[in-house]
Figure (tube, rainbow, N blue to C red):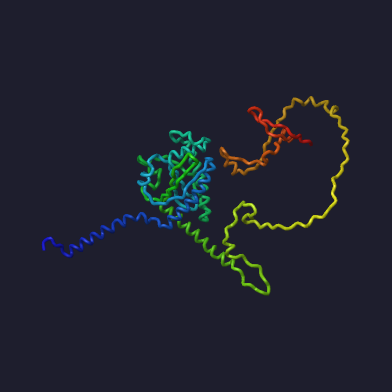
Length: 390
């Protein structure tokens, strides 16, 4: 019986194999931190918020900004360091109303240089060697406006007030020792990483990442599900309320709107020929036929002015040297304070003048003539075409 294993020894070996095979399954639980529904919800929230932020960034840099559909995954600090080998800018956004916690946006250092150069009136090619305090302040202002618009979109999506604190920016070198106070709890914990591809004109073809703590991601999912749950009963009750009443042969009733009509997409705002939401439908009525009338132009008797200009100029020489301010006005418009604060280099302001319309000439603020713009060598001028008689 030498060399033979007893039944107890065989059972012990089999038990050890079972425990070994079950160990990796416990270590692979990182994929189960977020359910597929939670991943999809976080991706949808980030997609809508970052789409609004891209529109805001376009108004700041005057370049086409494209941010692709996000990719949501679970990551750790070591995996993040492996993806970003250069110094990058950490932008921390803290929520102060509606949501508790903060998230982080990560931008590459070269991308920040391009964005700040465009914001300062450059063409995005005159890049500095190192980011200064001015550049960090500029990127903080850009992120403040971008994430402010994202918070507005998130507030509309969740149906409650969402507000953020002014973002803070830090240049972080992921290769060296990292100060944990600058990166928060992301250094030693698992977090949600949302990855975007970002393009800015022909200058930037890079990526941007957004990091969420696990607790904040689950809180967003819970609020998102509850907001969707509040909308679904209202949508289900709408078709039932729109059901037509039973027909009555004796007294025909006007038909109520059908569910199919209620499910039709609403008209786009601002489209010609379609009503604006919240406004009554305009109806056209046929005008009554015009009656023939006998009309003729009125006849006025000529005025006998009895005006002799020679006798009226006896004292005009006394004021010939008085200086007057001549102003040429291309046009006017009115803007709100919010619109004026959004002015940036490249902003186009539409005036109330139509192209080709005569330009007003004012003397001391009073219109005296009309004319057309001409170019004299390298200067602008105006050719008077009409004198205003008062």
